[in-house]
Image (cartoon, rainbow, N blue to C red; front, side, top):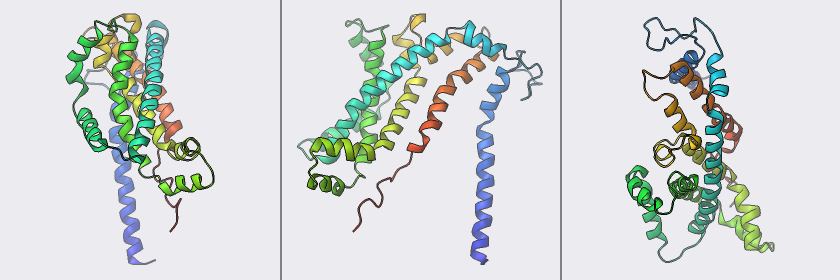
Length: 281
């Protein structure tokens, strides 16, 4: 074994150890929340708190699942997420393909405007959006929030998928057309399957945004039966003095699990460069 390989092996070992330690450090808040959720005592701010619960209990999770309205919040959030993802991708994917493959007057100007719109925080337009939705009766209505979410995430989805469409070689489409495929068949059977990782990743990012969004959810949905998970958690722990931290921690862990499971299921799609080597020469 050469000195170069020994040096590379030692360096790789130290890097692996470093990143393992870093992962454990970043998991400390999560482990802290899990410990609080399994503790029967309100020991969050006590000086003798430990990661191992002194009085182990699952009552906090039972109260979250059966004593709170978390299932209603979950239903509302899932509905908003599914509709927002569907509308955002239905708008963004065809638009991204057109911007990637077509050259038309005003293309660059439109892209620059979209970048400009996506550069400002969405909260800056909250007052204007409220004034627009209120006369339409969409305040305290899920459809109003869906419009806000779709408008926010459609631009992001367009840019995310356009960047991936740009990496797909046009030679693949030209070869399919030479074999007699129509334009629609090229898109449906060649381009979209190749762009599946980007589409899945974009859908997952939209899901995470809707799942965690707080400002618009608490502003445009004020009825308790229309709370999302973020708004419901805020109502569950309004202040540090009135709420139950173990119950709040249990609720936080519970609402995080669905997204975590979906992420692990979809992680195999989060790989770029699937078309590398698809065209030789």
